[in-house]
Image 1 (spheres, rainbow, N blue to C red):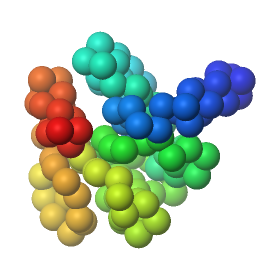
Image 2 (image 1 turned 135 degrees about the horizontal axis):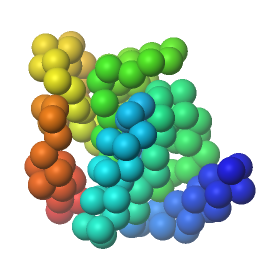
Image 3 (image 1 turned 120 degrees about the vertical axis):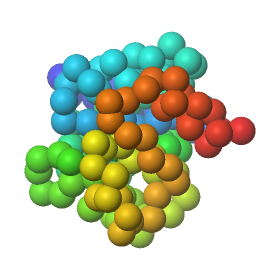
Length: 132
């Protein structure tokens, strides 16, 4: 598995000018569905199951331009905490948050919000606006 991750990071390094997104979602089927749709729309996509995996990936590649993260996730921090860390450590990254709880994102700086249940067309529309 580490080999696939390293290959993905290497490909990400080579595609630094590409339209690269990191999808952070703990529900594997939801994450896979979003990632597949974004790939079909022409984006390069990395996936992470939680904030710790996302931050590890960000530490190893500069290819990511946008993070789409669920707000409510298990682990050392939720999506709001991840957004705060990303804003302070990677200020150039765009942050799109998703949740069924609208009020949870009020206290964090982000570039957009997608309510659950997710509308894939809305996610892709937001991404297109980030890369115009």
